Length: 51
Image (cartoon, rainbow, N blue to C red; front, side, top):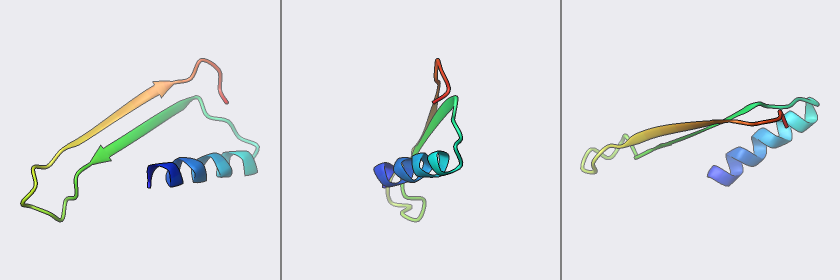
């Protein structure tokens, strides 16, 4: 799913002739499975040059 979402975001930016200066990645466990420990994190990185 990650590759799909990142690829779609890149396609949309190209179609709009847009650029981005920051990328954020989110990860979390399945909230509908209460038997599993729950975990969520996010990380952002600022790009040196908008691309």
